[in-house]
Length: 256
Length: 312
Ligand SMILES: Nc1ncnc2c1ncn2[C@@H]1O[C@H](COP(=O)(O)OP(=O)(O)OP(=O)(O)O)[C@@H](O)[C@H]1O
Ligand SMILES: [Mg+2]
Image 1 (cartoon, rainbow over the protein chains, first blue to last red):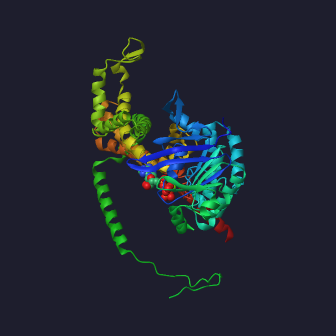
Image 2 (image 1 turned 180 degrees about the vertical axis):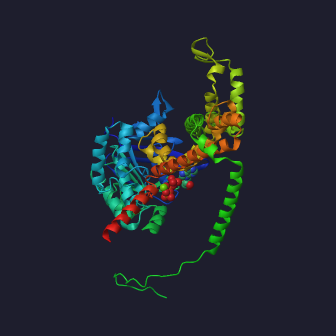
Image 3 (image 1 turned 90 degrees about the vertical axis):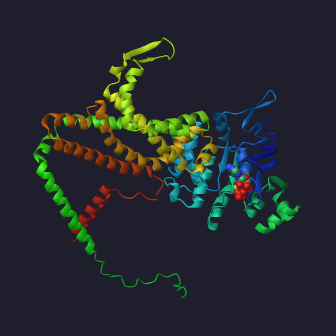
């Protein structure tokens, strides 16, 4: 029954690139309205796991469900079928993703970046999508940058447009992959504020980040990943304040 | 040496540099040399070429008809080339090995043989290989439309096929380079928003690839305007063939070749200007501010000067 189950459920997810195993059995649950923060050293597989959740990467073993629906596959008569590109795309439309390097469309203005997907993917009317985009850009503090091209915006502004672009699809889940890592320190705050607002409004979020302050303040759960497994997880205060594992401790001693 | 702190106040501007510009005597020497050589060539030409004949034939009806056909065949062949090029480029980048290999073979074949040979091939072989041109269901007797091949294969169609199919192979490589120049993150972002691969290619990848595709495509078109003269060998009555037709009767070979050359120069010049404006259009979003066009610059200079005069 959807509603009672967690929004994201991952069970022993495995993923390898060629011969290199990157995820070695990730099990994780994210409840509705929860903010799950993932931390871990470089190369531990955080981005890969995030990309598996919206099927940008195919998993080799295990299962991921979003809102009770299997990601990337269909189960029928006890067998697993691969989904068509069109079906995969339709499911991705319900999950927003924000990238470290923003990945705004450089040939479109901020407004066009935000209106494009609702119009082309959902078939929303152009004026309706325009009004929605204006409203979203206003809430992320960019009401005066509608006509600016990405190259005319600062990194922090670009990332906020990227968040508005994802939100325009009215997603039930937002994935953030180190959204502030490419930003100058003085621009990080604006982006984190937008994310905090989003969390406060009850958006379910999975956030890979090195911002421990954000993790502590906004995170409901925190998972520490290393070498393709979740080494330790729990409430951020507990994991960050009193890590139980040696690997967690040595990682935290380096970043805190 | 340390750093001078100015307490946040702007420093006063020191003396403006007033330097004597560097002299370039060799520029003058080379300019005079070039002028002398040019005068010498022109004098030699005037000895054998009659300028009044050139003037008389420049706007001749047959020449103008040929000019029109040259433009038509070049534009249409280039359009076929672009459409084919996009299809072939997407095919070559496809994950399906049958699709990508077919595209590879096509490009190998059409880039590896001379256009002239290809034109002659279509001219000669097609009417023999397929006696009739028909539209129907293959391998059945159902036929909607039929015509003898020789009639359908008019010079125009032969030239269009020869030039267009050949151009497709070149355009495929240009489009492929353009597609590969687009950052992977763009595809990823589009897919994460729920766009299908086809939508992503059409709306996100190709428009950005344009910036890389347009300049060499402009060169291809300029080249096509000239290559189209090869169609004269398959009896297409384009600019060169009509010029030849005239000088075969009046024996003014040089004059008519110059007439044709002048028109080719006009066409390629116009195409270059068009290319400049197209490039500007597709540079949108890439540069913070587009550079001004020559026309805009001229207009600005004129208004400045006028304003300056008013103020004087
Ligand atoms: N497309 C790919 N092909 C091959 N190897 C890959 C690919 N993507 C990631 N990897 C490898 O998988 C491992 C995990 O990468 P991933 O990007 O998930 O790490 P991460 O935890 O996000 O690290 P970071 O903090 O540096 O972003 C790395 O060793 C990386 O080299
Ligand atoms: Mg990463």
